Image 1 (cartoon, one colour):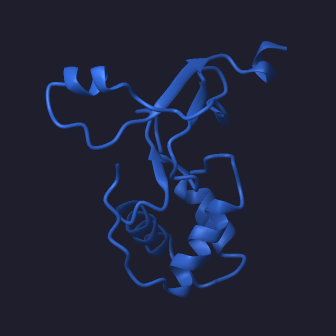
Image 2 (cartoon, rainbow, N blue to C red):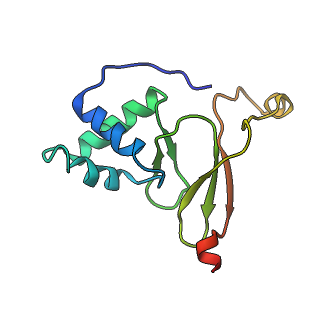
Length: 129
């Protein structure tokens, strides 16, 4: 559903993308910045934010914003389900066959649906133990 506007891949953008692709933890920009500095010590936080924005615009990553502090980012831009723990704040991917939204839901929306996410909220197994 996302429109992808492909731009050139700079070294900084490639490293930011690699860092994000290397984890399933749905990290913040600050975490991505710390990891990117291991490969490019001189990279700035502003450069990380600009490259995250470019990757978002190109449809290569997802931004997850839950209204509680910083956004989290997902290197998997394909539609998939997320489980958000309301206790510890961790975000987990979980698999289901072909996450799709029904045409009935799209038709009922009060406008043109351009994108959507699948999210569940609750308490994760670690916090339940």
